[in-house]
Length: 104
Image (cartoon, rainbow, N blue to C red; front, side, top):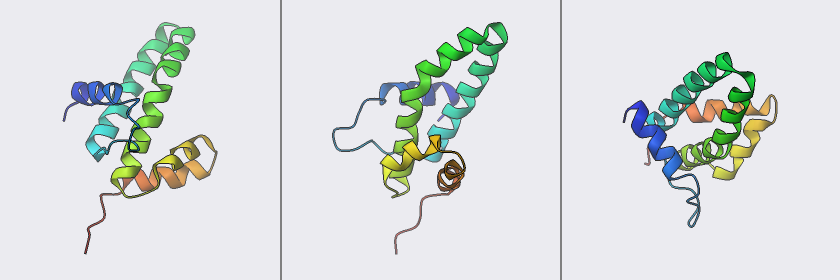
């Protein structure tokens, strides 16, 4: 998975919640975060309004990507909304850094 493919994957699967969010491996999520961070930095340098617009555009795809990542880790995906609560968001970040637990 590369940076372009992860962007395409995240935007393509943003609204797929029929059976809960699809799963997402670590590389998909972190490539997406890197791409959005770079794009945000560039857009914000050009114009703060443009950076804000990008933030609004990627809001739902980001929440969806976090949900898919948590589902992949066998954690309740709807806890992704906790990333917007100060301090508690650090717990979600630690969960997303982990690798998938091995099943005995």
